[in-house]
Image 1 (spheres, rainbow, N blue to C red):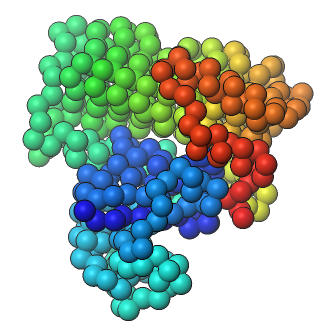
Image 2 (cartoon, one colour):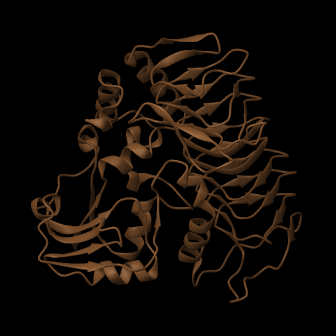
Length: 398
């Protein structure tokens, strides 16, 4: 078995905050799978991550020698061929001399001691910022769909449901795949714009309208009469209702009621209360400026659409409103009338009238209660990570 290390550079890890406050970039879900899960499908081996120091407690120790791959790269056939062709001492660089992969020792990789370098001329999908997660979700969703369903047979679509559009791609690949144990009744699914994947034991209730591309992962739930536009991914055990458009929910998070969420990334173990609404477009149609955790300034993005970026274990109360391009840290509790500021720190509570700090012990207590409902609990490693974030709000900069 090969040793595979998916590594983060400091700038990429910080650019993907707040989603990466509690994980390496390779553990981010984009499409149907996380980046690590994509690589595991192509290259079997023992995987770990080289990321921000405070996150090391979550990952196995680094091996002496390994195949090192940039953790923000999403694999495709061309990139896979280039990476797997590397021999000891060889490095794969992009056109800007940034390291994509290296075969050798950790010390040589970190010191840039390469016996030989190759320049990769392809254009890989890379997650270079948190908003790339929703921007690249459609392309990655179709790639993952083809990877997971190749050579397999879908469960039949129930007679009460309606499929709109051509049932197959031009190459004959079905556009809809339903895993065993999934439940759908009286659902309208439009596959004109891509694939729809319904994972094992997922449930899509009556009256739901779905426009591809869309994925509901294992045990995800879509409540009655929800309206979902692509490219949207519901990670394992997520539950949604209301209206969603181009949303990526990592896992175990809820938006179970009415309200709008668009061009957004939601971490794990989050809860958006009933009628939470999130703006994704400024009403003057101006360019989106997004908070940068390193410079502590708002930076232009070149985008017109960006909604909510929310870190793990955060939540909103009923009727909460989020302004365009709001970033929320870890363990925040947002509630009350009016629009809160567009940068909300970790471990705080409040709303438009201001925020106060919350002891990390109370955040862990709340997280444990939510996780217990799903038969889960905070691990010692997760507690250490949360404590590190509380002791130093931006450890990824260290």
